[in-house]
Amino acid sequence: MTDATPPLAGGDVNVAGVVLAGGASSRMGGRDKVLLSLGGQQLIKRVADRLEPQVGALAINTNNDTESMPDLGVPLISDRWSERRGPLAGVLAGMVWARSQGFSHIATVAGDTPFFPRTLVADLAHTLACSQSSLALAATCNDRGQVQRHPTFGIWSCCLASDLAASLKRGIRKIVIWSDRHSTQVACFEVRGFDPFFNINTPEQLELARAMLPEIRI
Image (cartoon, rainbow, N blue to C red; front, side, top):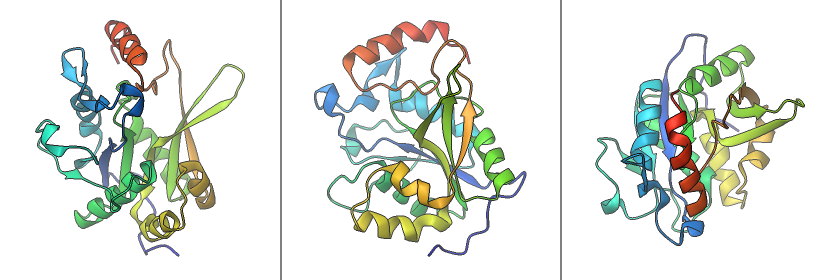
């Protein structure tokens, strides 16, 4: 059962943004990867600056040391459980926060993905409005027509919060397992010379992102 929140209507921008940065960064040797530098900026600031113009308000979901987080002038929200339950728990925390601020939907991005599209929220919102669904996730398509979903990038109706909370209590962790139960729509984004959803998990990927940065102007 879901709460009674209407679907996103055409032209509605009642969307809050949530940066999902609650992971353990285990492949970075325990360092909080979103605090690492990319092009003279901490990764979390670069991601937040890219998302903020696309949404009505912004928060960062983190379960790490908040004292180490730079002051970006936005709320820091944590999961509702003491143990880590993955990005779905961050989505739920975002829904609860956004609804308390009067928003009907959240748009989520991963805190380790600095090159996501500047039209991400608008394109996801358009897909959602056309379908009258409650959830749309981003995807890329290769030249063979194969679709790769990027499930931490999406627009989610806050009406899904009760169902998501119950699913997390039952032990569901993977976004696609839960989202496939909700008539999830997919918004496809072009890959033009680089993967806009390239994410940084390892020191090697961080160095690759630093090499890519001068070539990325969008």
